[in-house]
Length: 436
Ligand SMILES: Cc1ncc(COP(=O)(O)O)c(C=O)c1O
Ligand SMILES: N[C@H](C=O)CCC(=O)O
Image (cartoon, rainbow, N blue to C red):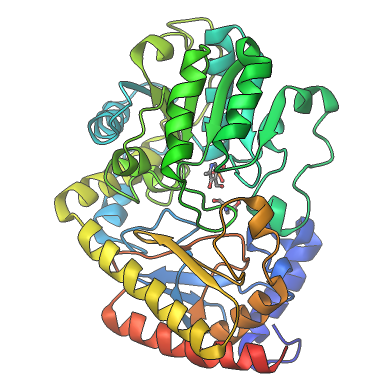
């Protein structure tokens, strides 16, 4: 934000305080606005499709807490579920029926999950699933794809997307060479590279972890050939297919990307929507594989707050509401309208661009052709993105603060919100181009 803009005065003060107390003033780098050249807004509260900052400004929100808020903020059934749960005690460290209720909903909704373990974040889900895959197969190596992000698990924080890519740290200091040595990084959407890796290391690979639709280098939908290779090659060599649905789960369909694209993974990780805005992650899959998790099997994984009553209440209320209200046809329609509106605005501004979207996940890339992999994404005009971001914020539209993220729409976005957003995009792009 401009350092003297009076509209953001309280956010500036709050950020100055936060920077003294926390590294970079934030608890996750994705929200620091570093890639768009400014300081973050501090949020006071949210309702429906809107965020309200500490200066009293209202924004149409296209982040939705980076995915979880598919129903909109402060959805009444979720608020009520959490209020009722906290009144009964915040945490017991003992089993509850609420955990089985959420597990049952997950198993009913996600096609490939026969049994599931609840954890507290997407990162924890990925870390646990990788350990399980290694324990189950007795192998060490894993495959991941450049620009995919699976949380900040050491072995997966290699060529990582999301804020790692945005802030130029795709390989973090602190990840030992030994840990990274067991991670093979391949280009996304490249079936030949997958075949070559298995030809060379086939009997050493425990799992292939992948985003079934990328959101963490912007939205990239995999090609049919790549999906077919993922579903055949690892299995032929006895490796597990680990589908990271932390972002896509319950968003692209009730059963996530795997339902929508016909993927049959061995293991799936979940996060975000499964917790309805509270900290929940989950990993699950075939019964035979899940039976290797302690205390049924030998692979260790635990958590003081795993299956926490408040978090499971928020998650179960969210999944129940998704089943009861079926927002998916509307999310499809508004996602398409949003994508077409952004494309028209970029066309009118005369900038090289491509809009890639699926359902309620959309990215406007400032790149002249299709973006299929990190090599393509890395060529985007990120400076133009930064100017566009601020020009949209000035018009009351809160986009993800990086070219390498997805915009998320929610069931709370109205037609009027979309009208405003699209006309703002026309003005903002003209301004961003003129300022370039
Ligand atoms: C695909 C994917 N996997 C894993 C994660 C990690 O989840 P969390 O941030 O809850 O640890 C994220 C998001 O951060 C994600 O988008
Ligand atoms: N892209 C990330 C998750 O999907 C953004 C959230 C975060 O890391 O804070």
